[in-house]
Image 1 (cartoon, rainbow, N blue to C red):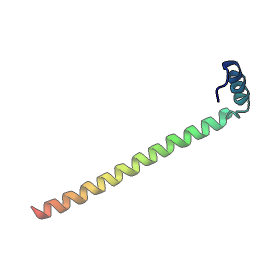
Image 2 (cartoon, rainbow, N blue to C red; image 1 turned 60 degrees about the vertical axis):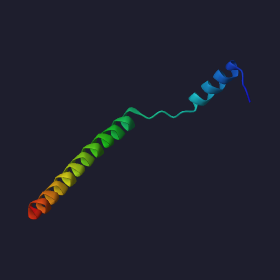
Image 3 (cartoon, helix red, strand yellow; image 1 turned 180 degrees about the horizontal axis):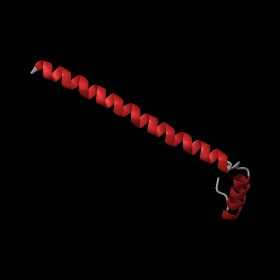
Image 4 (tube, helix red, strand yellow; image 1 turned 90 degrees about the horizontal axis):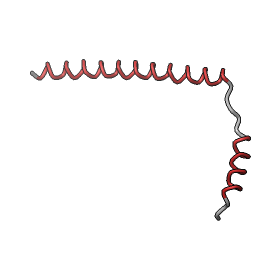
Length: 64
């Protein structure tokens, strides 16, 4: 199902014209959400890591 390059470019331009690009506000809001969730995730996993370390230290000091 080969198409010639000219037809391919025409179809590509047609499809690109159908794309609905986000507004500046939508980009800013979604970017802010991504950064916020990344920070919340980092804090959560840091706290979990600290709790696991304290628990393991407590178990290992009891065994010693």
